[in-house]
Length: 297
Image (cartoon, rainbow, N blue to C red):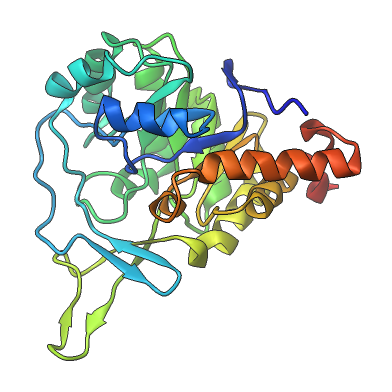
């Protein structure tokens, strides 16, 4: 069974992609994920200047996922470009970038373009970094402006990673109008935890983002609504850990899926998801395209 897909002009051997922020800080870790079956990999989000991120704790396991408040730590594109140059291999490499405004996004995209990433994913959705991410990504005008700005200086596909908000379709349309080749939904959901012994918030930043199985229904709803409206690719992410999860997103209309938190339990999740999808399609004697979007009908 052939799981090859064409995703905004990129050829992927299967529809599974490593989500941003998970094992994406070095060329070695990205290559490792590719070797374990991912159809493409996305880097850690990279900005214009070095950031240490929030004070710890920055990552806490919950019953059905993780709470994190990393704060977009990164070495800056000046340093990361050298790491990115050594990643190129058998699967497409997508550079996740962030900025505080359109010009900063443009600067980072231009800087990383020297390493020739296969696409850019614009982080317009991080919920816990003041002045970045969702601060910009909840404003349709800013979403459109930032995408247009990046598109004007790069010659590879540009994806917009959007936050899980009520007006997700409005944001998706703004991204499409700005020239985005795909939208990626969703990022983590704003959340927190409290230690009842000390009475203090568990995360160093107090509030962070929830990922993992608990957010899958929210992500699925966002994908479904966007696929019913947009004409560009929609990439689903949020709580995907099994082939059944992936099939749900594809049936909602997703062109591909990104996997993040599930890598913590098993780096072979990409290979296992692809194998499960293959067996599902073979049993029903149909193709990936046959099931894509069937829930929309």
